[in-house]
Amino acid sequence: MSFATELRQKASKLWHIQRVKGLVRAHARAGPNALITVVEVECDDPACPGPATRITILGIDLIRRSLLIHRPVADVTVADMRQPVTLISATHATE
Image 1 (cartoon, rainbow, N blue to C red):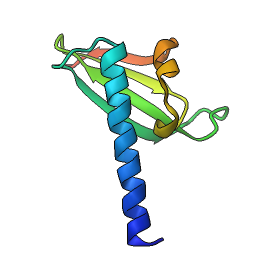
Image 2: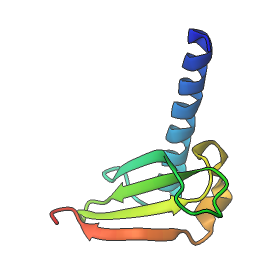
Image 3: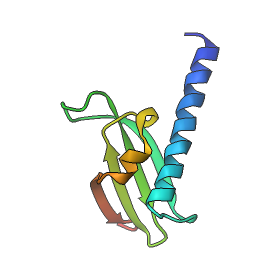
């Protein structure tokens, strides 16, 4: 794989991560002070076709909420934000 191809793939993934962060901020009403992380992880579920997207929201209340969407970050859409998603955990950030 050439350097240009690698760079293009990384730029595309970063763009999709930022796009999903914007969707989460808009649809979760997280506000400008919430910290939102979006990462693509390998899905442990055998029914999952490939990578999954893990979204973590650390709100101003210091409660960390982690969500898992069973699709790659590039495939996450507005419809995924409207559907009920699986809440992996909600913990206080000081724990």
